[in-house]
Image 1 (cartoon, rainbow, N blue to C red):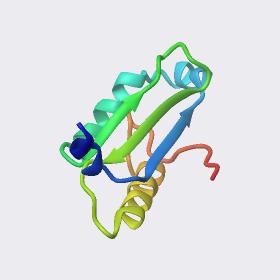
Image 2: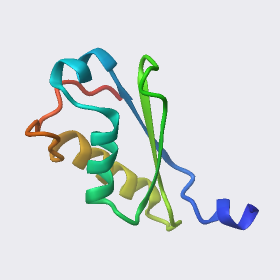
Image 3: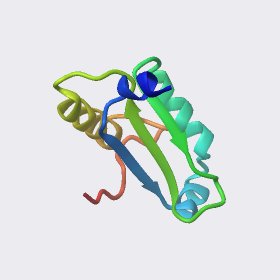
Image 4: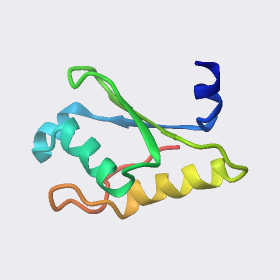
Length: 97
């Protein structure tokens, strides 16, 4: 089991989603995670909180380790925030580091 954890990147990207905004936009948590899986089918471990939590949390972690883990996870973050479309919505309305 310990060997399995050593294969994961130590970096985790944490996305915090406002459940009220999702309802207003007509988007479900499942649609978001499916879209992420579409763009990154084999690269990421996706862990999602319950859709009833406030805020809703999605955690993304690279499945393999490399010396570029931090750079890679930042590229994924920028893609998710600026490029990925969900149900026709391309640009995200808010971003906080």
